Structures are given as structure tokens and as C-alpha cells.
Length: 140
Length: 140
DNA sequence: TGTTGTTGTAACAAAGAACGTTACAACTAT
DNA sequence: ATAGTTGTAACGTTCTTTGTTACAACAACA
Image (cartoon, rainbow over the protein chains, first blue to last red):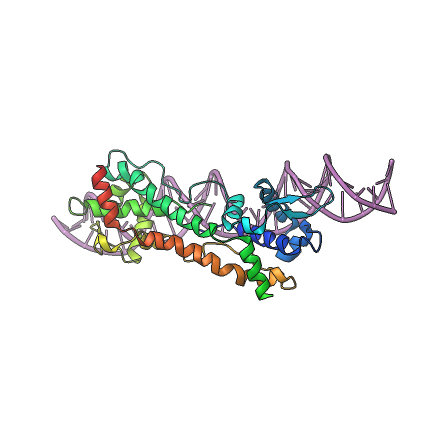
């Protein structure tokens, strides 16, 4: 199991916008060239980022811009924009209620699973686009 | 994206063994009845748990047993037994080395991604089968 | 007003993963 | 030998991911 590459692509998109929005027009072609992926893939992901309220896209004329300061955009926001809102773990659906374990497995495990998911999300919440931008500038 | 139900099924299996191994013979049929899933699915997962060294299976005669005390078996061990060893996030493969962002995106993001994965794994490492067993007994 | 460069989206295809199922060889106590 | 198991191969179905073509809708601008 792996998260789809939508997340790393979306992060790449956000970084490019943050880095270049004042230098040139960021079109889906520009982005697809940096990411090396089909422009339609970029446009779709860009669309979800726009609906999530982190970027603004100029229709017709073209161009993408951050809708918030990079300091206020976290990895978690990007992640949630491109991943379906669903529990991280797929639970088997119909454990047998006649078995003591089957009857209780959900209530025993649900909290633990949520804790795992929270741990993951908290880690992502602590990383901002601004930090990634600084890291990128340092490595350029 | 979701982790496959193999993980919750495997945990269900481990809990059943821990709970009943001294009371009755734990066969794939017994387990499939509690979990409500095909016996072959159980046998496959039981096989990976056995290869991971957490259970022992009696061939021919049948029956599954814990190979370590429940206190020493963590959710992480169960998780790793049933999930492929691969990075949690699928990175887009060929970012453009001629773009400053494309050139550095890997080195900027890899560490952050590992931190997310570690956060998840640490959370799982802190839960033992023994704790789940106690929780189950309380709720019975 | 027509042209040009965009975005948004539908439609399709290929590949892989998840899950369920049948079938059967191999094994072991009795 | 029999009966109850496990191990595993072989399918089939469904869903997700990823890439692709095609084209309508849109907005600046000559």
C-alpha cells in the first residue's frame, strides 16, 4: 500500500508556485514540465488545491497563485486536498457478533487506529510550505 | 488511499489466538468464522504472520499459537508482517533536473516523509497485543 | 471580432492491487 | 487408510492509479 503520487505532485506544485509566482506565469504546462507529468494530471490536482482554498487559478488567461502566505499552508492541508476523506485503515466489515472477539474488535481497535492516523497528521501539520521553500533555497 | 483490511484481519487473528489458544484448537475455519471472511484469506494472512515469527502453525493437525508472549507483540509487528516493505508515499519518478524545484524536491521532501512514517510506526509500536487483550476482556 | 493561449473536464485505456473463491496436493494424528 | 488440516495455485471481479486524447469554455489582445 502506498499513497498515490498526487501528494508529492501537489507539494511540488505548491513549491513551484511559491518559488516562481512573482517571476513568471505558472501554467499547467510550466508545472508539468518541472514535475515531468502530463499537463492534465497537473490541472486536475491544481483543481483540488484550488477547491481546498490554497491556490487561486486565473481562468482563460492562465496562472496559479498562493491564496495564503506560505507560512500558513501546511503539508496536512495539501495532503487532505488530494486524498479522499476516509479512515486510513480499511476495517473488515462483518466480524461475527457471536464471538467475543468479533463482537468487541471494533471498539477495541478503533481508538488505536485513530491515534495512528492522528500521529501522522500531526507530523504533517508541523511542516509549512514556507519551511520547504527555505529548504529548497538553501539547496539551490 | 487505504491500507488493506489485511491489517485489521491480522490483528483480529492475533487477538483470537491470544484469547482462545488454551481453550480450543484455532484453525483457519474457526478464525474465518469469527472474522467473517473466506478461510483461504485467513490461511494466507496466517502464513505471513508465521513467517514474521509471531505465530506458530501446526501443519496437518492444525492449530495456531503465539510464538512470543502477548506483551512482546506490537501492532507494528503485525502491520509489517502484512504490508509490503515500501515507502509510505509514492514519489513522482522523474522531476525535471533543469528546474531548481525539480532538482531539489527529493532532498527537501524525503526527510519530511520519513518523519511522517516514523510517527505512524512509533504509535503502533506502543500498542501491544497484551493491551488489546486486556481491553477486549474488559468489554466482554 | 477573431485569434491565441489557457483552464476544466469528459472519456478512455492500461496496469496493478484487493478480495473472494474453487480446487487440490501435502501433511499428521488416529 | 481416513479425516481434518494447511499451503498454494489459479481465476475472476472490482477499484484505484496513472497517462492520454479531445474539446468546450474562457479571457486578453491585436
